[in-house]
Length: 334
Image (cartoon, rainbow, N blue to C red; front, side, top):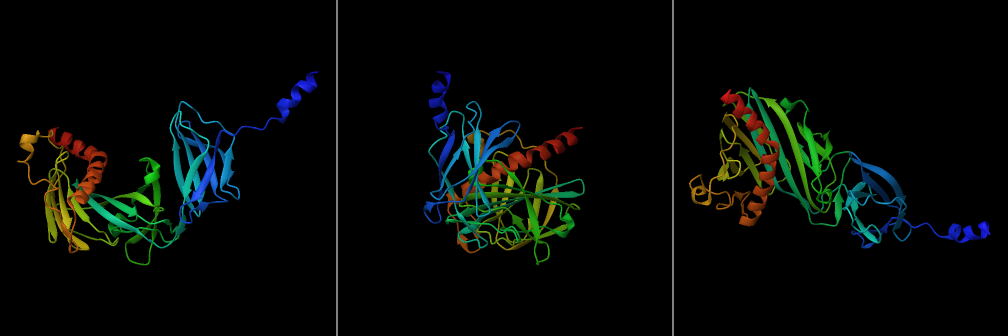
């Protein structure tokens, strides 16, 4: 009697907790042979189970999602990983996950905005560069050997640059990236895939600097819009700069660069920005940055394009420069 009672239970198929289909958006077809990794959040996301897609692009994972925490799926195909987040309580079956073919050529990928923030202090100059790349195509730009985006890093930095990449599917999570030396002097390739959508690359480095001395740099990334930025308390002088005014929240001054190189002199040091002025007083703090779009490389860009660039710049300044400014401000009061 007991054996017969257990037979139906043994014959029941196992119910998968995470299922779906991987679709290649380059070809428009289900993608066989893709690797699907299921991650759970502990102190960080940790791989719980992994599966391969079948001939119809389908996958099945038996591990159950943690309903109280976010879970993550990372699908790897053609050398590039694609992130799909599962918020708490969201469906985990019947998913459709997108991947793309990858190419060593940029295709439709381009640098829409490049922002260079200068922070001189204590005989050193910290440079924070933010690249916003847009890829409107259907292939991922990926070149592990030579790097995708090419950037200029001065010899004085001695190759010590901190690089992070944030893809559109990463929900704001930056991932450390490496740089690869190219055949051109002081030019490096960033080993980070540029997927369809928007990608952000941040590069930070520090060089010795004397206040007021010339500092020269190059733009090697074929930018559509290049901005030089100085925090509150720092002044800049040089040619080919179009003063666009202040970023109101941080009091950083923004300049459109009208060339593929710069040679500037910096004076002062970063200080904490004053409390935001009300709308009545804001008009007295200088021209708003969205009033005069820069004439960059012979093209007049729309106000909305500049506004989006300044929005990205605001995040860069608030999260990466405000700490330095506060420290210098407190040191000045001491």
